[in-house]
Image (tube, rainbow, N blue to C red):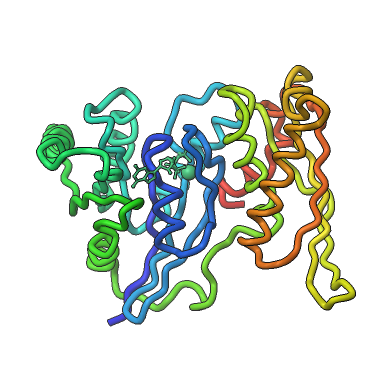
Length: 307
Ligand SMILES: Nc1nc2c(ncn2[C@@H]2O[C@H](COP(=O)(O)OP(=O)(O)OP(=O)(O)O)[C@@H](O)[C@H]2O)c(=O)[nH]1
Ligand SMILES: [Mg+2]
């Protein structure tokens, strides 16, 4: 009996949703950083085995939106959970209490009344006794709302701990169905989007708190050329777009040092991920308030509203 289905991975920002999906898929379908609100749009990651095909949907972390970008991010979570057969509610165990943001995620899940697995991540960071307390806290909370998780699975993506159990539990909770995708397909993110997201990952890692949240990246041109040695080379020109003009000199840095650093680290990373030589040129531009402008939010909007 072959099983398949869509599994939405939801939770607060920084819980490790993208890290988990990358690990299970075995390919970096989504960027990951220590900063909250890294993921902006839904991305699929497919795990196909002899007995099942699990189509994970990575979603942006649940937060209170402060601009239109944030609103579209949250619509991504809603559309993902509506369409999935199963939900994985991923929790960072180092946040042991249920705060307002967590309450909002749980209430949304309860409202939908879908099969949900509580998955507790980062257990490499806590002692066993604390884990039991956390499980009890979440169980007590949902029981008061007349809800129950179908399963509870503690994991550490870093230590590869519990991931085999998680896959088995997911499979157990899926219905009998033919594969939804070709067995070679493992994501819906395009190479162009991988480049944009990878540059954004460097911005999140290299720039201070609020700056990267006001930035977006757009690939302007993407050409594949075979060089004289017969190697495939991608010639890519990308723009980093700032929503404030004060951010532009920060992104460029003194004498262009920061921009060179961003370009080089992204180029090296992309060569590994895409398996080709990369020639990358990045420009920095200003588009005041792009975070509020529908025209500039098309990709986030289309992906998160499934258009
Ligand atoms: N200690 C530890 N850290 C982890 C583990 N899994 C993920 N992380 C770290 O947690 C941070 C957040 O990971 P992400 O995968 O970007 O989190 P996310 O839930 O996708 O976050 P948003 O996209 O902002 O919603 C990163 O620094 C990861 O390296 C784990 O098992 N143990
Ligand atoms: Mg993420």
